[in-house]
Length: 456
Image (tube, rainbow, N blue to C red; front, side, top):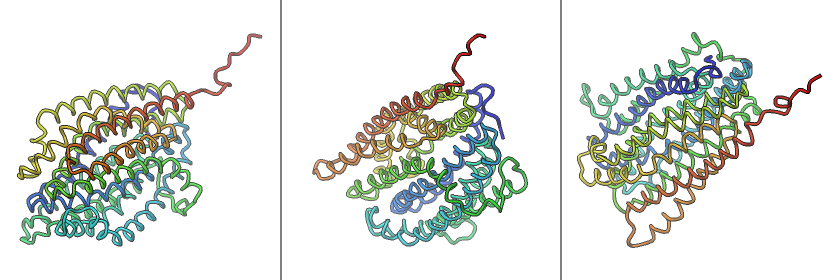
C-alpha cells in the first residue's frame, strides 16, 4: 500500500495520474485500432461498430458500480490502516464480478439483435453491429474481474501493475486486430467478427495476468477463498457507493443511444461521423480522466484518515490541473478537428459530421473537467448520489429538447451538439453546488477534536 495521507498532494496526484494516463492511452488504443481497421471495410462497418459500442456504456455502468465502491471502501480502509476490511471488500468484489460477468453474457446474447435494430440506420448496419457484439460480449463479461482487481489496487495507491498489464494486452490486441479483421498473414479477413474476437482474447489475457499478480506479488489485499462466499451485507456496502456512479454511466448510455436514434434519418454516414468524433473525444480526454482517477484515492485515503484539510487541498489541486488540461484540449479541437477525424475515414461527409461535433462539443470541455473532479470527490467521501443527481439534470435538459427538435422539419444535427453543450454546463453548475454542500457537511471534525481544554 502507498500512504497518500503524507507528503505533497500535487505530487501524489501527478505520480498516480501519469501511469493511469499511460494505461488509459493504451486502453483507448483498443478501440482506435479496431476503428482504424474496420474503417478500411467501409462506412456501414464503422456505423455498426460505433452503434454496437454504445452497449459498452451500459456495461461500464455496471463495472463502475463495482469498481467505484471497491476503490472508495479500500481507500478509506487504507487511510484507517484497516487491512482486514480492505481485504474483505476486495474478495467480495471478486464474487460480484463473477456473477455480473455471467449475467452480461446471458442477457447480452438475448438482446443483441433487437438492441441493434433499435439504433442502427439500416439493415446492413444492424447486421454489422450484431456480428461485432456476438464476439465482443465475452470480453465485456470479463471486464468485471479486471475492474475489480484494478480498483482494489488503485484504492491502496498502487497503479503500476494495472498499467503494465494494460500495455501488454493492448499490444496483443494491436497485433491481433490486423490479422483477424483484415486477414494479414492468414488471408482470411474476419471483419467485425475479428474486431470483437481480438478484443475478447486480449481482455482474457489481461485477467489471467492480473490474477497471477495477485497470487504471487500483492500482499495488502489478496485472494482469500474463505472470504469469497457472497455476503449480501458487503455487496450492499459496495453497491451503496457504486450504484450512483454506475447510474451516471447508465444515463450516459441513454444519452449516446438517444443521439444515435435521433440522427438515424441522416444515414450511416452521420452515425459513423458521430461515432468517430465521440471515440476521438474519449481519446483526447485521457489526461483529464487520469487526473480525476488519481484524485479519488488521494482524497479517499485522507478522508478515511480524517485529514480534512488535505481533502480540500486535493480538490484545489485537481481543479487546477484539469482546468489547464481542458483549456488546451479545447484549443486543439477548435483549431483543426478535421485532422483528428480524417485518420479513420476518407469519406468527406463522415469527416464533416465528426469535425463539426468536435468543434462544437469542445466548448463544454472546461465544464466536463469540473464534472470529473466533482465526481471523484463524491466517491472519496462516500456519498456518490449528488453526482448522479447532476447527471440526471443533464440528461433531462438534453432529452426533452432533442425529442422536440426531431419532430420539426427544420431539425439539424448541429442543434443536438449545441443542446449537449448547454446540458453539460448545467450539470457542472448543479454538481459544484452539491459538492460545496457536501464539503460543508462532511468535512467537520467531531466536537471532541475541536473543543478547547480549559486550564486547570
